[in-house]
Length: 416
Ligand SMILES: *Cc1c(COP(=O)(O)O)cnc(C)c1O
Image (cartoon, rainbow, N blue to C red; front, side, top):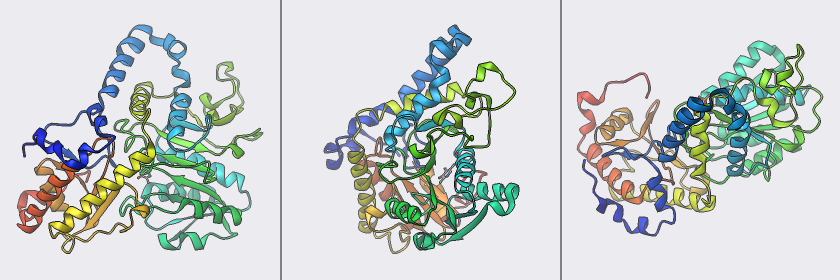
């Protein structure tokens, strides 16, 4: 499907204060991309920074770069840039490892801090890796770590004096439902429970206020709305009250770069001060260079404006689906109130997989989530209203004319 400049002339795009940011990104030819909640787009800055890090830093300065280019502190300097987007004070966020591994670290820390309680309370439809990490820790710790799952709507009322940790993902990966962090945090505090919030679908998509909401720990990805590249290092946040004068290390993955004096090479572990003790091994510098550059795009971006555009795009999508008569055939499973949603929508259809394949064949990238949902992610930094209009028109064609029934759209690959 050929896209022309006139596609960008939608009146809503002309009024968009963030419109110019689209130029930062490499938009693949003839493609409309609504999958930034799974893997954000490559930006020109990231491409340049990684090349420069390879050639100038690794290539020419080799090992001196650890000091000369401050590689050793990148997990912390980048952590602070992420912290700025999630309402964290400086020195409380670190960029390292994967979200899963970071969850292992903060979960262990929380259970250790809330000694005497074992119950990790989470939701049945939380992202599976979050639940698996608890199950793994249960295998290791036995009755000192137990997982209790409740339906999302019952999470708040299930927090009790038995709860050690409330483990919640702010935005549900399937439905896009956004949980009320203020209420969860308040109830957890009243009951003596600690909070761990997964921001995988929040960071870079909407304002987050970790300190104001009094959250204990947070984790999240940088390859989704932060556009830092496939498998880019994740982040981890620890509230100030847990980072003061710790005698005991907070997390069990003792590694030399989380040690107070790594270059003393002493036999016994002693944790570094502050958030640095959450680092385990050597940071992946090339991947971090990409995260660092990707975050620079957010400089000067007003997160309230970003949120406004995210809501604008998703409301416009729903409006266009209604106009095309699609909502009866593929109803939305996302909350109807924008305040209760993240930056995505999901629609139910028996043939959602094939519909998604048919969209992809037209250059419109969305994703399918089992068992029967078509998921549309809105990245306010680069998506446009014109794209929404065009994508919904294509979807209407596919659904109303049953194009999805073609044999070629039924084939499933390893990654869906
Ligand atoms: C994408 C996602 C993850 C991914 O975890 P990794 O360890 O980085 O692969 C974790 N949690 C949630 C809620 C996610 O959406």
